[in-house]
View 1: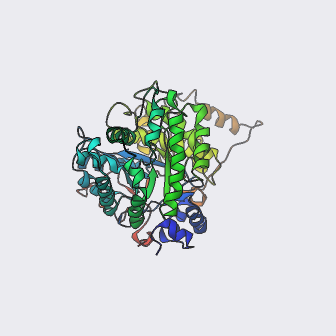
View 2 (view 1 turned 180 degrees about the vertical axis):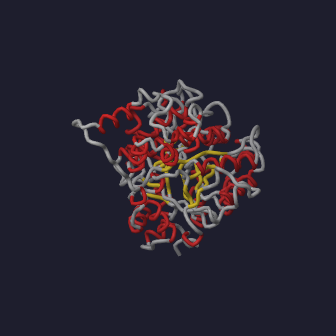
View 3 (view 1 turned 90 degrees about the horizontal axis):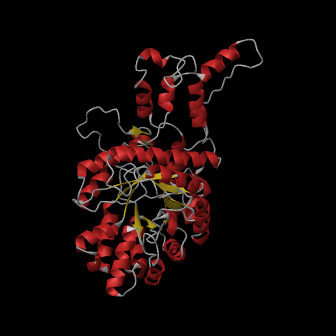
Amino acid sequence: MPRTQLERARAGETTPSMERVAERENREAEAVRAAVADGEAVIPTNHAHEALDPMVIGADFATKVNANIGASEDASDPAGELEKLHTAVHHGADTVMDLSTGGPLAEIRGSILDHSPVPVGTVPIYEAVVRAGSPEALTTDLLLEVISEQAAQGVDYMTIHAGVLMEHLPLTDGRVTGIVSRGGSILAEWMEAHGEQNPLYVAFDEICAVLREHDVTISLGDGLRPGSVADASDAAQFAELETLGALTDRAQSAGVQVMVEGPGHVPLDQVAANVKRQREVCDGAPFYVLGPLVTDIAPGYDHITSAIGATEAARAGAAMLCYVTPKEHLGLPDADDVRDGLAAYRIAAHAADVANGLPGARDWDDALSAARYEFDWRRQFDLALDPERARDFHDQTLPGDNYKEARFCSMCGAEFCSMRIDQDARERDGGMERTDHEVDLAASPAAATNLPPAGTHDTSRTPAWPPDGADSDDADRSAGPVDERPEADD
């Protein structure tokens, strides 16, 4: 009996989740089903994640953005992680990953799942190491136990670093930054200590059986990704990629949806080639990239260095971008860092979709530009990616309501505002005609992620936010009433 979206798509079935995805992407449901059946798109939908509003990840659809959250042994708690989750969803995250390595792990994860309308991903080896006490103490049974428990709890996708093999480890000798993936470094230490092959690789078929049972999408981790531009596109990275290509086929043959993770630090001129190579090796499976950072000189600003690479990666065919916050390499991000990271990555994803000519993707740009030219400040704020930020910046110097009707801002002032001067010139009886450009966003063929407001999801099955039920300016945006949700894909 088909259990997963992949198996059901290959059997010719269009599931309720596919229909919901088609609605959100402004596409035909059959196009969604065909992409899933071909392994070129995934719909991460664990049967037990009741709060989920289904979405799709694939190169032929709007570019998606993931936000990493999670507690460490030194910082954060369940309440803090819920705040980060809320901030991430509100500011446009399409998925979130709980990367917690400290605190009550199952409680944190359960609370995130209960409150998240977007797919939730994890890296099970983190919890396994916490339970084992050290990387060397890991066992295959413990890894399978953690994967099974997280799958039963409702996790929608899991990063599994099954592609790091013993024979790859010597290829990292001479790197500037060695092995920078947490999962990759943990497994390398285990293999060095035991002299045995990667247990996630050895037990891969058993892992796939667990994931299939719950329809958990496997995200094949890049444990040997480069951690500096000097190490990009080296033998270790590409040796692991070849293994990931073979594992992609094995997982899909087992009925499991697959996406593949990609490199973290890559010079700008190598980004597109990396994406092309992954898509060829992994037969078009969705590529999920961290960044990549295109330079290593800017701690504190790596949300910018990485968003540059992310834009190029998405333009070249990456399906989902894992955001980087200003705290990358420096500390655990807080809610403000989550907001800044998501702004950078929503811009990257949208810019790539515009460049790639996705239907209607530029309509949002045109609508905001028209409002800007007409000095319709309130509409500009409403259409902005981050309305609160745009309004706050404007009002810092011109706070009065009368300035919401003004034909200038404080940057140029009334006398030197180019758009005001242009409008006045066009009102005269000269050779220039008055411009009149209107965009009907309600009729746009764009996917929901390429239309305002950011962070629109059906939250009808999530608990109220804030928890005490008080009003909040940052309330999660709902896509519609309860009866517009798809039926469960049991």
